[in-house]
Every structure is written in structure tokens, then in C-alpha cells.
Image (cartoon, rainbow over the protein chains, first blue to last red):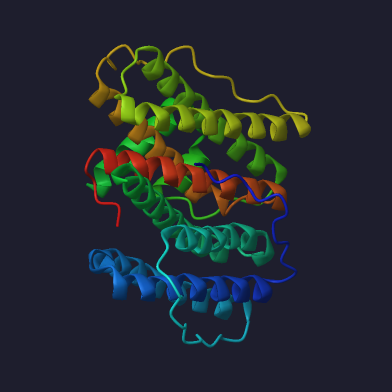
Length: 141
Length: 172
């Protein structure tokens, strides 16, 4: 289940636009995590681990914004998703991973690229963890 | 542990014939390279050497039937990904009118005779690929190659994470 590049990927016009897209997609993922941790007790260690990474990623983006002279962003509170379906979480997570890849060419700064690449690696790992969870649920029937 | 991992990644990159500037990026002694066509080509070449090695390891392990039934599908998927990465990057080198890196004659796979040994070699090459793409990608000048290399890196992380889980290493 490798990630094939999307047929029509985002072509961000600016770093600000790319970072705003990432922040919106990160909030989407958070909605599913909120629902999961409330309804599936065994997911809590995983959700806590993902959030630790997310907090570090926010710090990286704040650093990128400072480097590029962009205004800081407000983190909007996410409302809980209506269900805890893993495929929907996977879709949101996949969109977030792609957004990081597609943001890189818009940054124009090697340090910023390096920071977002590291975040993308964490998020791709999360995506695989979700895939493996989906596979184990399917195997269990 | 991190030191040992860095050592084998460097050993693998040296064995694949990487130049000193790229090795320096990998071990942290070089912070940046000049963004140029030459740098992009050097990164493409280095990446190709790792893709060739990964393909050789997976193909040998599959031919020797070393993967348990439940893991064979991952190996087939991952070697397919690596062939896709190789072909994409071969195309990029050829577009630039350069001659791409060829596979080595020998990857010293004679001792890979058990499932555990195969998974260990697969995990090592995936860790090396993930580290290499992560270290090198920020130095890429061309936007289309940067995007391609980012998508490849996402695949490498998937491969590494699956093998880590199989070997009982924490993945979150």
C-alpha cells in the first residue's frame, strides 16, 4: 500500500499558503484523534504519542515562519469527528503527509525544507501505524 | 544505539561508493552543499545506489523463499516500490544527459540464508534509505526532483516502519 503521488497534487503558490494548508489538515487529523481516544481506550497511548510529535511539528512550523518572515498562525480548536472510523483517519493522515511533500518546493529555504521533511517522516510513520492497525482489525474479522 | 545505526548507514553508503560530500551530509560533518545541477546529479546517483542494493536484497530473499507467508506480500510490495524509485530516478538522470549509477556486481548476500537474516538486511537498507533521503533532500535544487524524492521518502518510511514492527521495535 505504497503512497503513489496524487494525480493532481497541490501546487502551492507560497510558503504561507502551504503552511496554512498543513495546519488545516493537521486539525482534521486531530478531530479523529479526539474521537478515537474517547471511544477506544486502547488507542490512548498511540494518540498521546502522535500528539507529542504534532506539538514538535508546530514548533518547527513556527520556526519556519520566523525564518521566512511570515506571520504566526493561530491554532483553531478542532471539533471532534462524528465517528472513529480508521479509514477516515487514514484518509486525513494521508492528506497531511502529501501536503508536507507538496509544501517543500514552495519553501525555498534548505533549513525549512529540512524541518518539514523531518515532520513528514514522523507523519508517514503515523500513517503506516494506522495502516497496520487497519490490517490487524481486518485480519481479526 | 543511534551511534551504531549511524555507523552502519555510513558503512552502507561508503560501500555503495558515495562521495565524501554526501557522506559528510549523512554523518553531520557537512551542513550544506551548493545547490547546483551537479549536486542534484550526485544525489540522484547516491539514491540509485541504495535502490539497486535494496532491489538486490529483496530479490535474493524472495528467490530463496526466506519470508514467512504473512510477510512475503510486504516484500513483494516493497521491491516493487524500489523498482519504481529506481526507474523514476534513472529517467531523471538520463533527462539530464548523464550516465546513471549501475548496480554493484556483488552485495555479499551469501550469508542471508534465514528469514531473520533477510528481514535484518531489509530493515538495514530501509533505515539507510530513509536516513539518506532525509539528509539529502533538503539539498535538492530542482522542484520536480524535490517533490519526487519526498514521495520516495514516504515509501521508505513505510518500509522501515513495517520491518521495525515485525522485529519488535517500537513504532510509536
